[in-house]
Length: 378
Ligand code: ABU
Figure 1 (cartoon, rainbow, N blue to C red):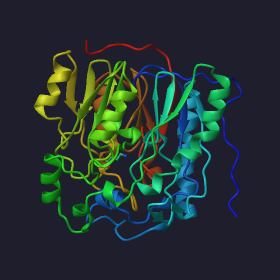
Figure 2 (figure 1 turned 45 degrees about the vertical axis):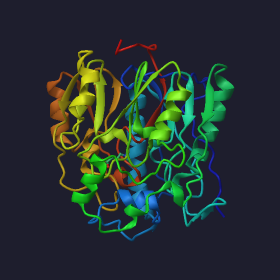
Figure 3 (figure 1 turned 180 degrees about the vertical axis):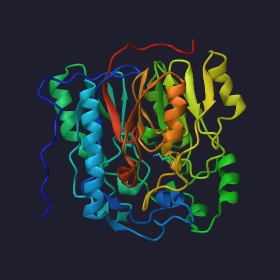
Figure 4 (figure 1 turned 30 degrees about the horizontal axis):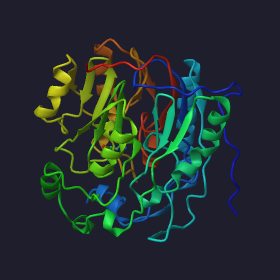
């Protein structure tokens, strides 16, 4: 029998929720946990993300206790480093991810986990929005954050807790073209260049990690995990923001913007050189004097075993403020690039946690950053 653990809260002081961007001084954050993480079973959207030659192809089931322990050790250490920098840290409460899940439209043999909060919860100003999500195995992941949301709701009278409409995620939401397990990179690149993604336009779908916050502007990746209706939903939900869709044709598996396009501080973004933002979309940034530079090459040629993310987790970094950045400790090229940019680099060992859902940006979501709403693209 699965026993629901007690929520782990950073401290007893009342929480205040507010965060408008990716770089203002971070004071309160949620860091994920690896407990009970699963290798998810096959399903349309997830299969489209797993490369043909991945060791995850055809596998699913509980991850080993040893791998979860190692991941938790690194997650706990990351939380301690943040705390040593004056950042309050909360942790989600796992549910039983191994249990089968179903809705009237589908059944899935298990869920996924709650290591990457960034995928699920989008903080914009004083609101934390639960994303619709796009994988069936992540349909119920929001439940892991409800104990924290309840606490923030009790503490902060101005906090808004919102959930985007749950999609049905029936077969109509996914293109059968992506169901073959031998599509090949060439065809995938042609499809992504044509913006022909695994998710259809049946209903709004988005993962929170496809959204980057630049004050008054929200930059949203259109790809496997976020469709155009999802972006339209976000545009209507945030009427005081400009919501701009971007896409990166060089990425054969486009999920989540945060290993592709990473703002460092006002005026500076690093872009994955294999997933270049097209020239016509760069214009928006350039005309406001923002510089987009190529990110450093990853230090590794392959992801760790049983990991569904790419080696470009090297640039999935967390800004503690606009002069301080957390980078995975073995990513020497990325650390050197930041060092040359004049940033203080905090090396964080994290590769043992990658398989549970990503790197340092994925593994966190903002509760409070200092600073106010700024229009960087007037
Ligand atoms: N969750 C970010 C994964 C992106 C990538 O695999 O490159």
